[in-house]
Length: 103
Length: 209
Image 1 (cartoon, rainbow over the protein chains, first blue to last red):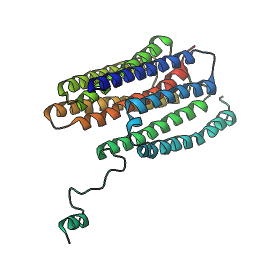
Image 2 (cartoon, each protein chain N blue to C red):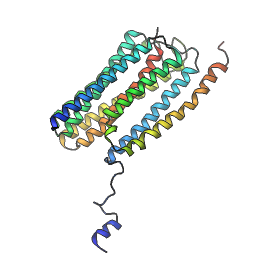
Image 3 (tube, chains in turn green, blue):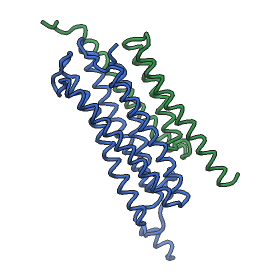
Image 4 (cartoon, rainbow over the protein chains, first blue to last red):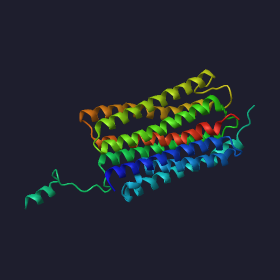
């Protein structure tokens, strides 16, 4: 494969990823006006956003082309910290259901 | 002791350990910054979700027109600016300086347009009576969380616009090289990725039906 072929192929991949990210953004708008509500809607939205972010990190930021130990050093620690932040949710629901009623 | 041995023993210049990740140290620093910034935005979005969950009268003020249409347009502009930054990075790697600078400046223009649309969105909400700790619809925390999250993101966009302009001028003069263009493109893509979480959490979960 020549350098020009490689460049064309990379641009094609970028355009496909770009289109996917935009399509997923459109899907989020459709979901927002769909029948799902509350926690179910939020989980669907976050799932779509995670796929978009995955595309962005792997293809736009080229993390898939880096050495595997860089990926292993960066991603699991970040995911762990973000998951640990989930600990707060139960307290927010407690506030909602056990709060003093609004006068 | 040989000269090589002396140099090794004294940690002299020129003999350095190979980078464990096989990337320049500047790029590793950028990745570490991105990770820490991702956690900052994550914490803000979790805090936002916490306050929203705990407030029974959380407002849903975003109408399809103009708010959601504006947000869709902003998303399109920001994602497109990521694509133009990719083209710029590739041109810089191929040593096509003029083309790289042109595409960086197109990216900067996208960033400026995004910031202007964002400020227009803010002004619209402010005209409707949204302030940091009050609004006409419900929980007074709405304004504080909304302006904090979107404000921090807007600050990142404006910072990116400034840095990319400086990088393009420095690259033109030979002060910066293609590695610098690539490293700052990582930052710009990150700003784009954060927006993909801000839109559903802050706007789309609060649409007016």
